[in-house]
Image 1 (cartoon, rainbow, N blue to C red):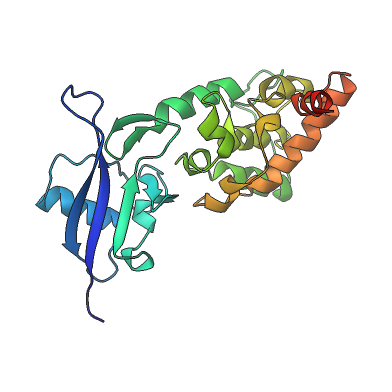
Image 2 (cartoon, rainbow, N blue to C red; image 1 turned 120 degrees about the vertical axis):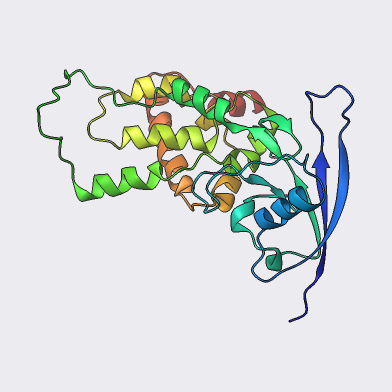
Amino acid sequence: MASRNLTLSIFRFSPHRGQSEPRMQRFEMEETPRLTLFGALTHIREEQDPGLQFDFVCRSATCGSCAMLINGRPRLACRTRTAELPEEITLLPLPFFRLVGDLSVDTGSWFREMAERVKSWIHTKSNFDPKAEEERMSNSDARDIYELDRCIECGCCLAACETGTARSDFIGAAGMARLARFLVDPRDQRSDASAFEVVGTDTGIFGCVGLLACDDYCPKELPLATQLAYLRRKMASVSLQREDPSPLQLHETERD
């Protein structure tokens, strides 16, 4: 098969440089067999523009660093082959996150703050005994926890989220899946009411508009749709028990 000539239109802007202005810059290169977008960007940085900023660590879809908008869709550059794309490729940084420069965004700060907001650690009243045997759980529980622990914190779910693009305080599918991971953990003793304080608002599960683009674009295919439905039912139940209508119910009442 004859190789193609690729044209990559790449967003360029460094907010830390006073003379920098947002623009799109075009680069051309010859496509090689089994070329990934990570490989193409590396070639451009090594051969054409050493100042091009983009992130990478593992190159095997486990660190999440190379997530970006590829022809308008959030994907991992290391997992996307150019053969899957047209000859004209447009690359933009992920929305929602703070821009570092060009295609590089700061996902780490947001995920750290989200972990603190969700309080993502086992809540228990028992004192830790380092000499005790590890607490056992069923295979079913372990599988459910493992599925949600596979999140690589790439930010694709937030970049695809309609609510996330509208408000920066939205906890997103990643944050809600993180909380769900502890709610299904038999070792965690937090109550549903305490979980409600974290996600029972319009910045949490009641802010989700249900388009489920997060589920569509998760590169690890986490069961986000299932977990969002699980949280919505659980938080709606807590809201009814409190006789405190959810933001969704209030919205419907005002509309009527």
